[in-house]
Image (cartoon, rainbow, N blue to C red):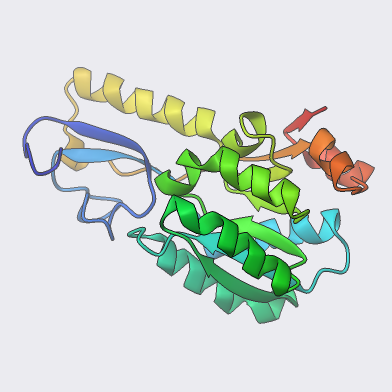
Length: 225
């Protein structure tokens, strides 16, 4: 769409790295006909995901990270996560998948590496294959945390922590209203997520023989039974 028009307003609601992907000049001053809400997955979010995994699976010291190297923004997320490893007292192992037929071998490799848990870095490719990823995580009995709730609500995954899909969708709708009322995209700053949801699937936890503590449940925004 960016190649087709430089004048018709375009609003995004899930850009991973709007500046790095070339959609806007800066978050505060987009400078063109494109603006919206980013779906940022920073190292801080990854650190929080690891902390939640440790609460769910005490004693883990090696965490697999599944990500798509063809993504224009996930490499920076992986590098940021790896840099956080020593502070989190865990080792991160990278498992790259960019074609659907690579999922089985990736999970085989995770098992061989004795990964205690898994973080899935989400992009459109991973989200498209969310059911397959959740199925393999269950088959290989690897406790997994995802970046947003669709992996849990629609695919039966164990838990997710990340930007609220409903919240950023509503913010995207507010951009439509502003532009229809005369606002200029170039002058509408890109918003970053401010609401983050923790979703826990008790059925998946039971299948993995995991004990979800009352403290962890109390912090959940949604619990699926």
